[in-house]
Length: 160
Image (cartoon, rainbow, N blue to C red):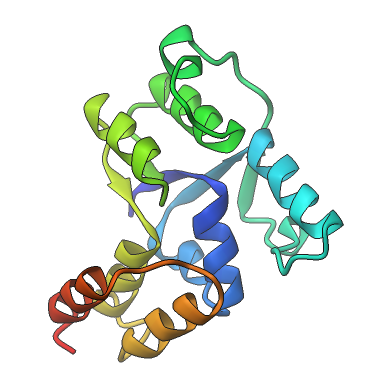
């Protein structure tokens, strides 16, 4: 099983569809940068449905890292920047990112990137769920924007 570094959105959306515990099965370990913890705390303060990371002790909170200039100059959020900064010194970890710009930046730096939809596909391939269509639907109703084309491609990959 691989090790990962997670940004906010995969944790948020997997929590909203009651599937965050799949991460524990899919990965040896998952690091969560302190910047992501701060983003989630702000969401909670504003009344959003966000995961309480204290309920998931298998998620390892990693203290702040210095953001290199080449990452700081990108138009990324604090969480995405922290994920990329951690990855630079931990190249064996794959990155959990949904944001398009952050994904492209990570891929340009040579990192393997999984988004929330890839996590659903892996969960199905590992036998954690029989179907992902209901999860994709729940992601959409919980606020994740998924184009019809992407939705269909993911369901085709899942054989649904």
